[in-house]
Image (cartoon, rainbow, N blue to C red; front, top):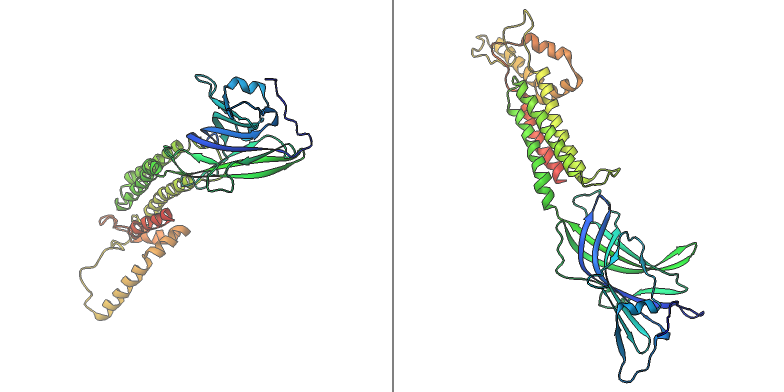
Length: 381
């Protein structure tokens, strides 16, 4: 057979190349490199009038790979491909078949590694979609078409037993487009493979440990405010533990300029752990007091056991207790802590009694409920 290297349009209609694929397996999907890989059978069909033959009782012939070096074949490539290759063990994995009317069928076994620009805003609850763009010629010469476009069959099929460690394969779509460039209009085939990430690994390795560490930082609300070393050490330990987990889970991610959902959650955990330490600093500075020299002997939180004999004095004493109770409410204490009210602290020190010690702070009591409730609401949101 004579060598046929070039396709000649001769001002006729463009040659139509029908294409379909069978994806056999899907390899690694890398967030750090923004790429993915898969193995497939890539099939193309076209008609070359120069390959017609008339042999009695023979309508179709199957040829080996060496035959391809003697005929024209489309120079199809993957526009977003990176390190794609054809399998050659034990010999080149391709199949060529020619009909007597010049119809050519070519199937190759390929491993394709292609770029996949992922948006990690919702990571690890994201659903990445990875494209494959097939290009080759301008529409004046060749038109690429999916073989089963417009029918009930799919042009990009996937083996049903594909299993991925971190993803579920949701669906695969295909489309024909035209790319308008200064060099002409190119016929383009596109494939989109949609995945859904498994969340179980991140719940066990990140969300659950960080939640438990954050809850551990709230134990300080039940520790006596006199135990400063215990409360401070607990707060510092929980912050360092959460920061260590955060550094570990970020190792496999690219250095994107935006925060992922995982980053947001880890930062929320750190904020709550730091807030627990700041809360203790406020409790220690504004409610744990000692009397000034010459101060009163009675504590502000001490309860009188003997009522005044005079009803008028009993009424005055009741009003004083109610006023002190309002002044020591959580809202007032919190406001005075934020504003750094030194006058209030001086008054407490003047009324403090070292013999009776310090009772449980109202701020600690309220934080036992406020911290868990708000953290749970933010996490579920």
